[in-house]
Length: 175
Image 1 (tube, helix red, strand yellow):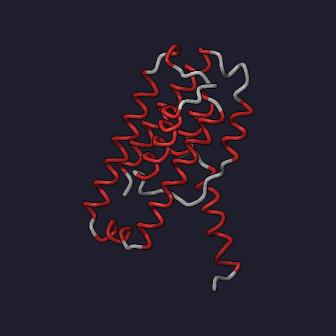
Image 2 (cartoon, helix red, strand yellow):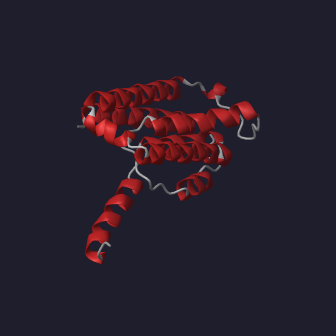
Image 3 (cartoon, helix red, strand yellow):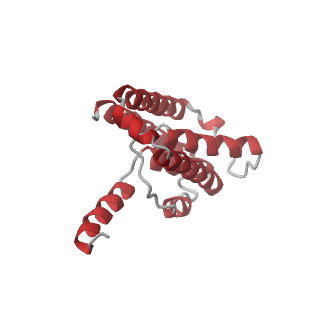
């Protein structure tokens, strides 16, 4: 059993890691701000579903394999880096006219947001088990009429693209 003295630093560390923006948060913030609440929730669903993969891998000992075989960890890490850079490029190069209508309810669009969240989290070997879905709720509240302006969306997309690329660079140089 853990003592309170041991749990408090752990809780603070995990909470801090969850609050600080990371690739997953960038995805659901970007999707919520640009495409609406539904896109944000679908992205969170994909990210959360990927946690099942991480938990299953841990239970089956596959996570230990990543530690024991550095090449496996490195391969997963570089796949994650490549995906983040791909997302950064796609996000940066989208034109305002290509932004999907917020009311778009097609299953293809739904699957798109879900899969982006899922793949982004599955390819993140440093993922944590704590994310606040309230970020989507508040991002949707913030995403009022001023955020829906093409000029504001343009700025948001470019900032998110730069942050995704920086996360990829950070991941490339982490041990």
